[in-house]
Amino acid sequence: MRIDFYHHVTRPLPFCCRLIQTAWQRGSQLMVLVPDSAQCQALDQLLWTFQPQAFIPHCAPTAAYADQTPIWLATELPPVVMGRVLLNLHLSPLPQAQQFERILQIASADEAELTQARQVARHYKQLGAEIVYHDMTGRG
Image 1 (cartoon, rainbow, N blue to C red):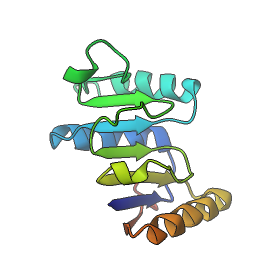
Image 2 (cartoon, rainbow, N blue to C red; image 1 turned 60 degrees about the horizontal axis):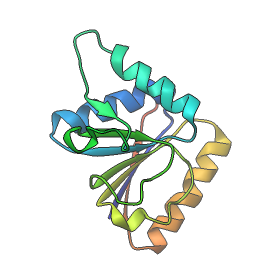
Image 3 (cartoon, rainbow, N blue to C red; image 1 turned 60 degrees about the vertical axis):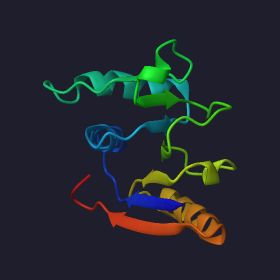
Image 4 (cartoon, one colour; image 1 turned 30 degrees about the vertical axis):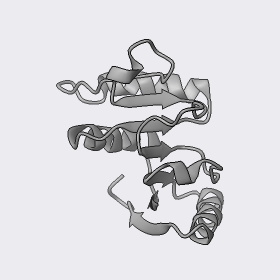
């Protein structure tokens, strides 16, 4: 399992859209775990508008056409894991983490978020995960 931590992200939702777009362009299936329904709705709207010429197919994992859609937005993980890559917008370790090959985590420059992200990284290291850090200062 590999965990990619993107830290010092100044605009998390637009940055998420870039990560989602990259995953989709690479042909990956991606589960996006969002903390609450308001943020899920905001991300859904932003995926339609963040680039005028881009379309990123996405839906809820419970949608009738979810099995034909590569990107899923959810506030909680479904009982059956969909995809092998997770973009986790929660800053807490997931009990189901080992079901994924790769997890993407985002933290802003806020010191409390960075402290929480460090705790999450320590947890994943204890599980034997490979941790990769990406400093997004001035880039995200």
